[in-house]
Image (tube, rainbow, N blue to C red; front, side, top):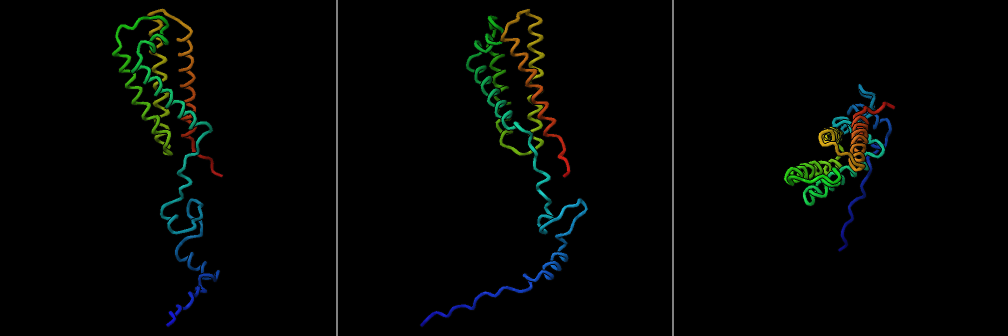
Length: 189
């Protein structure tokens, strides 16, 4: 016995009929413009909203800066934890370390901040990116002030210290630039 073949599926003509499709879309309330001037292609996009307006328009070089910051924070943290004498000597050329504990605590704090930086590198949320950039700017600004005050107290000035101060001002400027660029509202087309 041969198996009986089911009849071929027939396509409904009402779905291909343009007038019928337009009537269906009108009943569903899709296809026309809403109050914001957006045209929704489906009821789902109308209910959930258009995800394009929530995506972050990233400024050029933002992810590179986040990566460089994460590497910088991690590298200095490891150096402060493992080699506190060498880190202090690199910053304050030739000065002796009285205690390694504060430098290691500094390394632990930097390691914690670096974990936040690494996580922010993989997020697309505007608020998290802005908060990490603000954290960086505050950190570099406070570090600039602390190193400047220490130099005023000790009177020791070296090329390494000057490079540190200039780099911190540059890093503050870059972080603030990206902070404001990420926070800008996109221009309406």
